[in-house]
Every structure is written in structure tokens, then in C-alpha cells.
Image 1: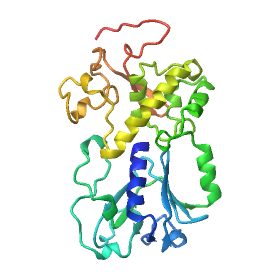
Image 2: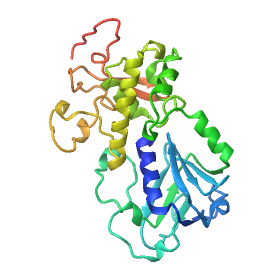
Image 3: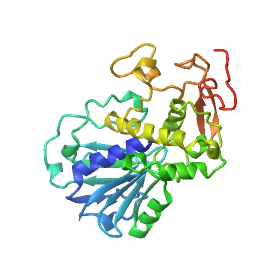
Image 4: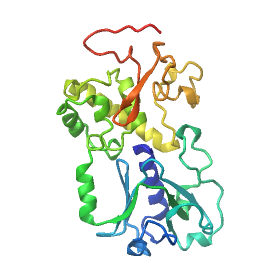
Amino acid sequence: MPEGNEIHRWAERHNAAFAGKKIRVDAPEGSRFQDAALVDNRKLEKVIAVGKHLGYDFGKDRILHIHLGMYGDFSEGTGPLPPEKGALRVRLYDAQAIKGPVEPGESKRHAWYSNDDGTGHIEAAKVAWVELRGPTDCSVFSQQQWEALEARLGPDPLNGDPATKFVEKVRARKTAVAALLMDQTIAAGVGNIYRAELLFRAKLDPFTPGNAVSEKTLEAIWKDAIPLMKAGMVDRRIITTKPKDRPTKKTGLPLKEEAHYVYRRQGKPCLICGTKILTQVMAGRNLFWCPNCQAPASHSMKVPA
């Protein structure tokens, strides 16, 4: 599932391409999206990103809400509209721009993030059309629905929200901190990769109850999340390792297997201490952690590598 960095990246690109213009919105016959007429040929004021949600603001009570879920993704391009194919849910396009030429660059699906090094993309301002397939939700929200969504979600590191509410929400719960980080009402936009990596970088035992984590540690996690997630907006790769900790490539973009400290590295040696990385399901997703670097605070645990 795309995390907050990817959602904010799409919002940034679609704002550059379409904000301030009258945009055509259509859905193929048989699509599950039936409300295209409500927003078609209206001026797109802006594209909003909050957590894992996108809102295309076409005016009061005309907010196209998109949640990509596990399988949703965008394709984009320049020049004429391509033939409709696959499970196309909705298409947004600039009626004037699609009369123009096909520009250099390519549309890349997110798939496995670290396969994308950020090169070769179409310049955002030149995107003429966008196609959406496979989202969990694509529907038109009223202003009240959108405001209710924003009220339900927790603070978002990429929206400049301070750590205050995050700290308060975590410390009010006895649930394991690793489960709380997956709760979008506590930290909007943080997903499975960032939860594992932020906890490792904080050297925090993922099973620690939220109310047992110090304010200082939670503030540090929030502060750490902001630049990591902003960096993930640039080239779609989520890179969390520090150059000095990478065994092979200490300059430039890391090798795929050295981009993360613990995420999807179960059974492999920790990049810091050599202990085998562990995994188990928590909050519906696989959690990854180092039992040595993230030993419980109550005792110093030394596990053989």
C-alpha cells in the first residue's frame, strides 16, 4: 500500500498539472465510479493530501476522494488520450493539453518502490491526462464528509503538523507502539515500511506500550519522520539507512538490499549489530525488528548473531 510520501507526491504532481484549470472527468461504461458528471468540466481548485487520502477540490460539496488502498495506482501521460483498457475507474484530463504532442518521459506504476530511482518521469506540469485503476475508494465527497475525514485522521508529518497530538495520542494508549503507528487516527500517512524503520532508528522495542514511551522519544520519532517521508516524495524510493551503515555502497543511492534497516530483512543480519532480524504479524501487517538494537528498555538484551 502506498504510504504518505507517495500520496503527497501524487498531490504535488496533479496540482502542477491541473490546478486552476477546467478539467474533464470521465469514467468508462460499467465503471464503479458513477459520479463523474458531478465534477466533470469544473475548475479544479487544488489537490489535497492528508495521510493516505487524496481530495480533488472542485468546489463546495464537489471533492473527488481517492484512497488507493492496496492495489490502486495512477498512470499518466502527455498527448492524446490512450485507448481505454483494463479496469479503468476514472480519467482526468486537460482538454487542451491532450491536443499537444507526446512529451519525453514515461509513466511508472509504483509496484515495488525501490525499483524506481526517480529518473525518466514526465515533467509534472506537462502531464495531460491521468488514469486511475484499482482504488479502494473513488467517490465524490461533500464538504461535510471531507471535514469529517480530516477530523478522524491523526496529524500528518508531511502537512507540517506538530508532534503534540501524536505524542498525546500514543501516550494515552496501552497498545504496543508498533500497532499504534499503523493507526491512521494517530499518525496519518505512516505505513508498514516507515513504522518498522522509524522504530529501529529510535532503537525502540516495538512491543513497548504507548503510555510507556517517553515524550522525548516520540518527539524524536516525529522529527525523524518528516525528512524521511519528504525524501520519499522525490524519487518514490523509501530510503531509511544512513550511508555509514551500508556495508557496500556508502555514497549515492543505496543498493536495494541496503535501503532499509529491518523492513523485509527477516532472517538477515542487522546492519548495525549482526543479529538476525525478526518478524511477526502486528496490526494486520508484518512487523520487522532487531531484537538486540531494539531490546526492551528494562534490560540489556544481547542476542547472538
